[in-house]
Length: 426
Image (cartoon, rainbow, N blue to C red; front, side):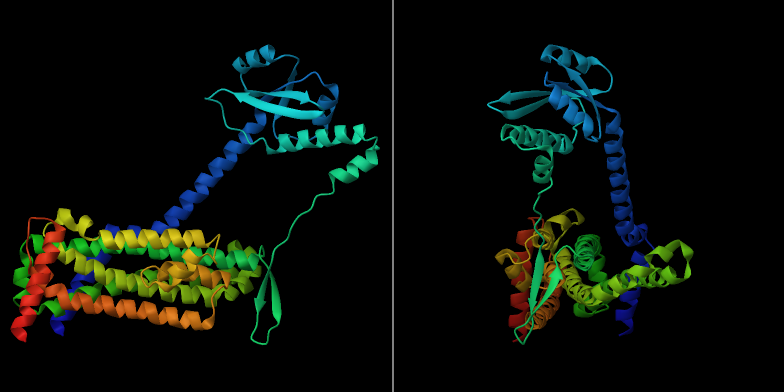
């Protein structure tokens, strides 16, 4: 047992003190910061377009008067012919020109711009043209100004209400666009991203660690003083402690941030959102349980697959099953944020390989029953246990097998060694 703890402590100490661990801990915050920064630059770029000019090619005075009444986000310049408007593209600040024609009483518009010009959003300009078109139709039908204004404002918006059926057959209503629903979806996305990033990062790190020891011929020396299974358990225990440390840091930061909202005036504006945060805790907590079991299972498989690789250069090839399965689960989960009841999403939540990614989506959208949650938890737990059994069974054969003929040949050779060793014991 002391040797097991020595290996676990060495794995833990070496990785926690590395810059890689520091980056993994703060990578989510860096990504969020970069996303906010990109959003800021996009918004700033959009606002800078307010100084740009769009040339309007039309001789219709009614159109000019109508557009002048609308509060558009960019400036307008009017030209009577296309040649003059095209010439204006050489002037500073002119983005493009809009050809407005009338065909059988219908307004038609085409926008021309240089391939090097900014791509403007023309939605508000299109709405202005639609209002002008509606006014012309109203005039042709002899409608007065008040009637035309009434028609303009008569837009229909469709709300969306989710009906949740209880055991007694009654329904409770929830606005699909409410802040509570958005918060649950956001929390699910955080759990999915956390699983995705940690699995990809840790699978590579721990597979490389085993492959490095194997490639340097250090593994034979280690296994001469400690059984292979005990060595594997030490690796898994050390890796689990590293993941627990990272998740613990996030929990401490989250709890500290939560209590600071009521103490520090800087975060006092978040105080009204505390009930909202407490409301998403059940689904978010379950999502973290699914994510944790998935991370442990994939981490164990990564150690096993890393032991198959003979050289450090073969590690990325050997862990391809983990990487591909992780990517598939992640994309199914992202799709599930839009279509949580899709058969692909429902099936993905039941498959143990993808359930840690997809199940948080179904929990957030409340499209899964309590029985399904329990069964999926049992499935994920069985997947984790199976991964552990598979690693314990094959690790001694794979870690001592050496082959220069690729990963697949190395796995076949490891399987043959395991069968022959099992036959000798029998």
